[in-house]
Length: 607
Image (cartoon, rainbow, N blue to C red; front, side):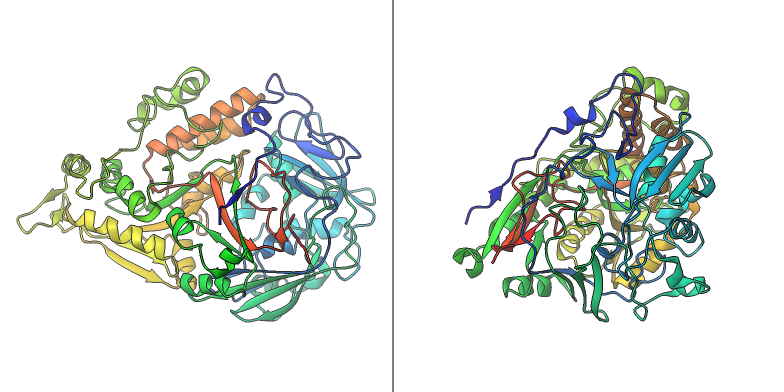
């Protein structure tokens, strides 16, 4: 059966460049946009990428490899079904994934920004309710923000906490945030914080940080948790009394009655469960498998549909990250040697039939990505103060090595050997690579259990490393150990995925800012401590025009890519979704495609 492909609703470049001249008004009561004005005018009926007539009902079941031991997605401790962060908790504003960065009213009925862009006031909707029917109050918003700024909360929240200088109730239903300096993106992010019911944890804040499976959260979203089997599944049911069903941002969404998240010990069991009809959907990430393994009986009969969902979001970064806190990866020449030894073209042919393009930079596949060749114009101006300390390739242009696709990769290994020798690493008489101190070079590649594709990539890669005189130790550990060790940056090389958006902002400091390098639990796994990175993020956050903003992101992309922190793998500008034929989605897609807020949010079940 041929996959079906749906067309995106708009071009990313056109949306990104809207309002590029000057610094236009960017908050308009019902919504708030990073640049320009919200696409949807006050009083709009629904978002463009939903079916407002979608029927309600049915059960949606999804699977993932691993386990869980907590229902609290906002704390550092424990393993949580990742979807709970979005399915069980509402925010003041709702992000539209049909626009680069625009939020519309949700728990808040309106938003107002001060002229100096250091204050934002959100006024709660008088009808806003928690799942137990009690009203959402300014005290709940304030408590939620404060609890998420404490030690023990997930690291994704704490950066913004340090920037807020005042948080106060205004009138009966208003909440005002004051920040230390103008920052458009931060003011918008504050409207995207989860709002929790303070009374559920009153006098028991320590219990909040230790919460596991015993206490089911009172939700602020359209779904409530109705059934849990530890480590096996979590089930949520649509709240028939949900207060906001008729809000413009909720029309045509949250259509299924039941959402069930199933957990499996490995990828094979996960796929077999889908083939057997135990799951509604399966997201394939391997192009070769998509072309080879999806001709089973349910597909042939039409009971399972193969859909290809295009997107225009940046690639982000996926691959083997090197921990620069440890030798030998503290030397950029060694990191480049590791990249030279990675034979992408051969791996892509073996694993993906050569069908997928490689990730070439952190913001590739979008107008935010760095451009080929030397830095020019505003990008060069932003990088100029750091020129003396920038790594080779940052200013003049950096590109990943390409091979002829043969397994030997002689050219890449020769270049790798030369770089290692330049850094003081030579192959001894015993065939082992030795460092400047004469010790044999070895390191651990730590992997999470469950991904056969990543294991295959590493198997091929380690054979190449042996030709350089390196015999790494490959360790596969369960999800709990993997989280514990990566939280503490206790690894040499490991696999990671950084997803980035069309509106990068303050989260970039948590991803690769210098301060985050020393904060356990941050996303700065590589340990980057480059003033140029911090400077480009600051330039991005303080940009007054769209032109300056794009230039700052492109400059950041150059510094990150030339930093050689990650050995990039492939990306796919199309998502592969196999799903039950009764599971439907709108013909019009958001520019983010298959992303947060797409499945099951805007999908529905037919009889």
